[in-house]
Length: 167
Image 1 (spheres, rainbow, N blue to C red):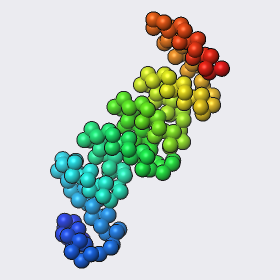
Image 2: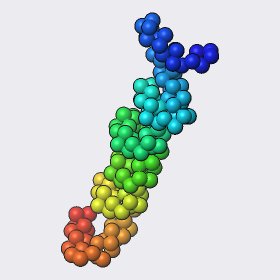
Image 3: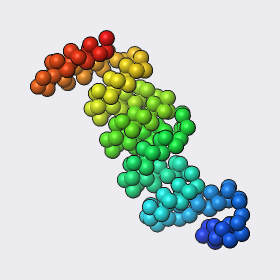
Image 4: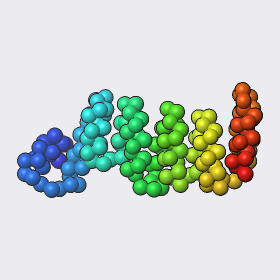
């Protein structure tokens, strides 16, 4: 540990059968950083996952373009975890509206979830989220979505149905 040979630390822990979980997790994080520094994000992700180092897992998964891992990470985190909004923002940046909205909702920020859906033009999801959470800004959101529907062929009936469902 003192010389920073984390490969040897893991080997010694395995050889001795030591149950020092904190030291093993620290060694896995350090090995993850070792591989991340060398651009080997797949190996880094594996070590970060072993250590349950969720911020590092999120960063490595995003660099790899492994967005399903990011989406799965949301379910692993507790409600209102401070990492959830940044994962949601990463998911928004790649167009994963439903997953981003789920992360924002789990973080306790329904407005950000609605904004993410609107930004990615997932109007139906935005309206559904706003309605289910009694979101105060639902009127302008409905009007914007209805205007969008009216520009489409057959959108008039869809706009009427939207307002009927929204009450």
